[in-house]
Amino acid sequence: MAISLISLFSCSNRIEHLSVDKFAAAIADGAHIVDVRTPEEFAEGSIPGAVNVDWEGGDFLNGIDILFDSSDSLYIYCRSGRRSAAAAKALRKEGYKVYNLLGGIEAWTKAGKNIDQDFKYAASLLPAGAPVPGFELNDIEGNPVNISDFRGKSVVLVFWASWCPDCRAEVPELKEMYAAADSEKVQFVSVSFDREFDALCSFAAENELPGVQLFDPAGKKDSKVAADYGVKWIPSLYLIDPDGKVVLSTVMAWKVAAALDGKVPVQGRSGQLCSDESCAI
Image (cartoon, rainbow, N blue to C red; front, side, top):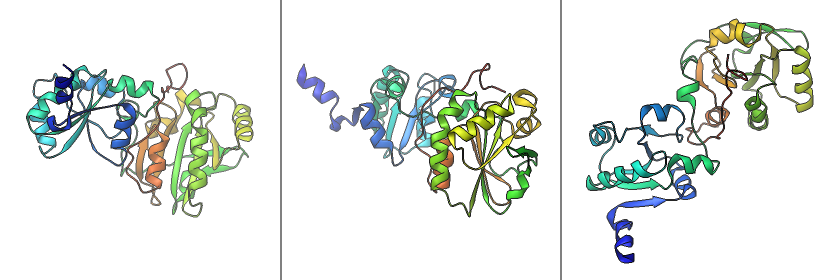
């Protein structure tokens, strides 16, 4: 029995079942990652960089063949590992080299690894290439600031509030991003939907928030700026080019950091976005 199990999972049979850490290390520099769950499951959050080909969708192998060549190595996963193990066997028969994630995305998230939730939460944000709508709000010193004031620089535009748990959790990441950016080329601008102006001022001072801090007195639900920018959830972030066009829209700060660093975003942080009572607009 031991010999047959070794044979089943050996490299010669072109399937390797990887732990979370080994799977993460293997895909860190870019890889063909396939999520074999349903589209509905995929929309709830996926491993960054994955494409969705539903194992139970009725045309799995044809979908794979359209996207990949049989000489490609595929890194696959599902919810808990059952479907991806079956898919791996089918792919091996087609000549693919297959790496299967043991325990699926459940093991991935339990280990604190990164998931990409833009498919669900950033769907209404302005697309890349769109000109950004103009707006003017006061900063915490009471001075009017227009988004067009920063033309000629790239702008990291953040929509947030100090009462939002995920916004607060993202502050260290944003501060690291700010410290690493070239201040001559990149401007950071944050729009707060705090209920009280004093709450914003206190949080900004206590946490030494970087960049320009703006206050939207309309609040999250009635904000024209939020409506114009398609913001449904916070934190939401934009990277805007010097000409005032969208480079990237996302709910995940790591993607902005990767874009500023000239990298293709393939890694991020995990975490739940806010519910209607906390951060939804």
